[in-house]
Length: 141
Image (cartoon, rainbow, N blue to C red; front, side, top):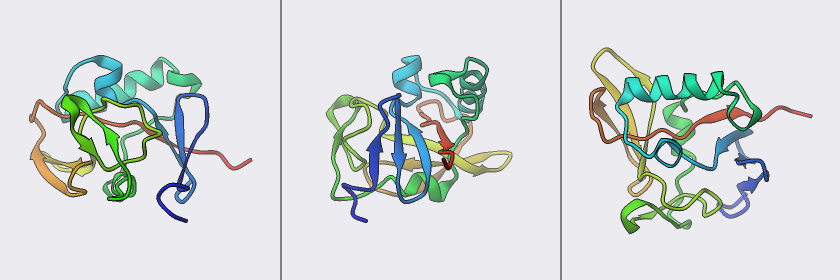
């Protein structure tokens, strides 16, 4: 499966990853909330999406490091915030943040994955210029 066929727009605000079986929100936290967030705010944001049945689902979560890394492909381009080229599927909503918080984390730091470089780095949890892209399992029919 190549990078262009890996993803399908489900037409319900989600993008299906045909390789992993995950469903990603087309929009990230910045597009939904119009603000950056630190790691703890990102966790609270995911909880709020579930309480609000965002897109009709209540099982959203923060991605694991390996899961978010699977979105990256040097072959793909999407225009992000501040006209930055991001290397994720163009099926995602344009003008999203250039990174995403992801798991695991410890008392001080958490991983933040860059859609530009394809690299995950540990940032202090109080780094305030973060984003998160919600993900959920796509049910087998």
